[in-house]
Image 1 (cartoon, rainbow, N blue to C red):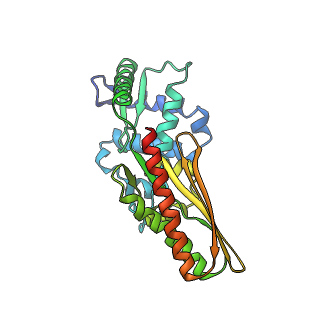
Image 2 (spheres, rainbow, N blue to C red):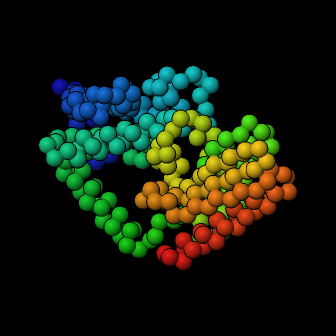
Image 3 (cartoon, rainbow, N blue to C red):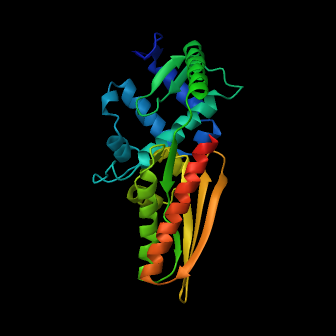
Length: 275
C-alpha cells in the first residue's frame, strides 16, 4: 500500500489511490484528446505527492510541462495561465458528469497550481458553499464594467493611417479611463496579447474584461473611413456602433479621433443610465 497523502481536508488518500484516480480522469475526452492537460495534471499531482508543492510556480510549469526555454518570462507570456484555466474546466467537466461517482476529487484552486484532494462529501459541501456565495454576490453586487480596446483592423499601407489607427485606440483608452464607473485595461498590454493567436474567449478568461471596443480603419484615395463597435462579451450583443468618414489630412484625422471618443463617452454614460 502506498504512503498516505495529507490533503487540505481531513481524509487521507494513498498515492496508489490518487494514481488510479488520474487513470480514470484521463479516460474523459477532455483529457484523452489533450496531451498537454494530461501532462499538466500528472506533473502537479506528482510534485505534490513527493513534497515539492512549493516548487509549483508558473515558471517551473512552463519549463517542465510546456517545454519552454529558460528565458521564459511569465510576465509577458500567459500560456501557463491559459492551460491552467483549461485544466480547471476539464476537471469540472469530469466531476460534474452525472455518471461520475468517484470518491476522490482532484481540484486546482484558481490562482494556484497546487492540486487539492477531497472526498466526495467534502466536494459536495464545497460546491454548495460556493453556490451560496455566488448567489449572494449576484443578488447584492453588480458586475463591474471592464473595457478592453482591441487593435482596430487597418486596411491601409499608408504609415500615417496605420499610426492614426493605433493612436485612436490609445485615445479611446485614455478617454474611458477618465470615467469613475468603469475600468479600462491598458491598451499596449491588450495589443501585445492579441498578437498571440488567442481567441476572444481565451483573452477574456486571462484579462477578465466584459466589454470590448473594436473596429476598423479603411483608407481609399483621399478618404478615411472609421468603423467602431462596442460589444458586451457576456451577451455577445453589439450595443453601439458608429461609422465616420473624413479626408485623409492631419487636421481632419484629429477631428475624427475627438468625434469618436466624444460619441463613445456619451454611449457609455447611456449604458450606465440603463443599469
